[in-house]
Length: 244
Ligand code: CA
Image (cartoon, rainbow, N blue to C red; front, top):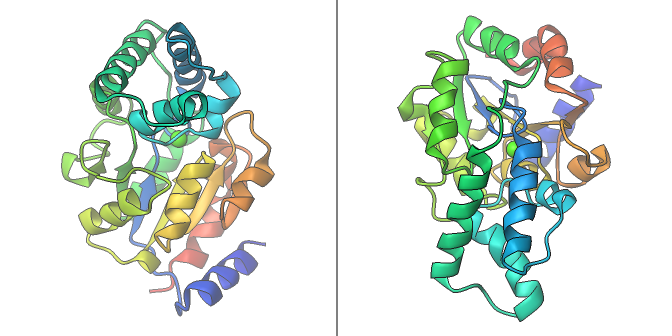
C-alpha cells in the first residue's frame, strides 16, 4: 500500500524517487491536541460578533490564517471581507479565549515520531498558520531542542496561508531541500491541499472529527487514523522514502 502511494506520487510529480531529508510538520492537530480548543474559541468569538460559525466548520477550515477564517464567515453574511479593525479584534479575542483553556497536551505518538525522525538524521521543520506566541513557546517545552527558529514557518512568515502552497514551499527553502526530499505531515484538508500543491508527498493523520475521505480528496498520498499509527508504521515507511 505504501509503495503504491509512492509510485503514484512519483508518477504525478514526474520525480524519480523520494530522497527524504526533511519532514515538514503542521502544528495544531499534529504536534498538539489543541484543535478542540481552537474550534471552541472560534465558534464562541464569531458568534459573539453575530457571525455564524460552528465547531465543525472550524475543523473544516483549520489551517487558514485568522483573517481568512473570519472572512469566510463574514463574506457569507455580508458579501464582502470584514474591515481590518474587526478582523484584528476578533482574532485577538479568539486568541484570548484560546488562552483561557487548559494547556494543550502533545498529540499521542507525536513525541515518539519526532524522536524517530531526528534519530535517523532528518530535519524536522514546523509549518503552521498559527501566529500564537504562546503555543510557539510551548513547542520548546514539549519538544525541547527539536524545532530551531530557522526551521519554523509561522503566520508571520508568509503572505498567503494554506491552502496556498507558500508555507510549505517556504518550509522546503528553510530546510534547503527540494520537494522530493521532504514529506508533509498534516491533519487538515486545507493543509493537505497546501502540501500537495507544493509538490510534496503528503501524509494525512486524521486526528479530528472529519471523515478521512475529505483528506484523501484534498490530495493526501497516505492516510493514517492517528499520529500513533503513523509512528508505529514509520519503520516500514522510512526505507521506502529514503532512496538516496
Ligand atoms: Ca493542523
